[in-house]
Image (cartoon, rainbow, N blue to C red; front, top):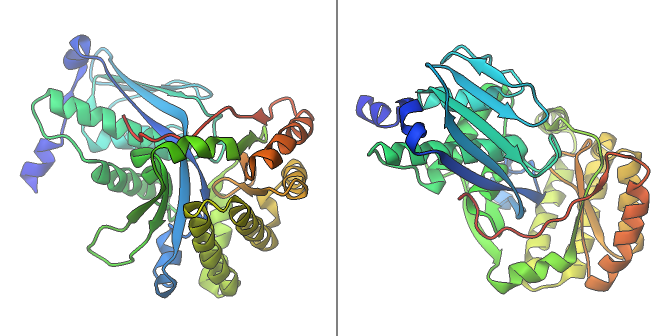
Length: 357
């Protein structure tokens, strides 16, 4: 164990970064069947084979590692005040605390971590988890530059999840890290087998089909940020107390229906499964959609499309899927609703096939 710890320790990488600046990036995601990736759900629901579907988007988060004088760690990210701490001194409940926790895991110092996201902050697209995966990928490149072994994508996922869950103080899922690491359109299942890899992935679409899917998707930012742990806490409490268990059984089934519909390219069946899942979750926790979200979802339903909030909802983004003619009708309807909030709007994006780079 001591040997492995030493192999993963970076130390002061300022001199390395003076001559070898390091960059890495990873995509965000939209999702269906989220929450089932949290162990509180997929362990007791194992007999139903729960899964989560996510679609990686080409709105990427980029991490640049640059040198800084001395042993300090500095993190800069748009929308947040710059933060500078000595190694192991950063409060992990700081808005940028997860980044400092990742840096401390690697024993990194003498580094300025620049984070650039092409997604709105706290938009329900997996932003903090995506940044953690990209940062781990950047530190992996630093390890390789120092003649040490790099980190596989599987391990990036496990490490990013473990660090985030350890500092979040609440159960966290795995889907954000998986989409960030692997990209594409995947159904992730949760084997719930202690000691084994906690996820298994199945691509639903590959190759040119990924580009074809672009024409069937819309993503809207509602103009207000969200805090996913608030809704997730409600769901976890309800589930553990025994409330709404049948709802979660149905969500498992609908997620499986959605995945099968995508595989056979039955976009209408996928939209119908999405609307039923959204209705169940809204009945359990009405706050997943605000007034604007309700109007967007209603417009999607009227156009024959499916609509769902991203992540745990409560602000952030809403996404839709539908036939191309239905999406053509929905786009101006959504633009009209979104015009009522200056910070809201459609996000230009497509499916990301690459994952972390």
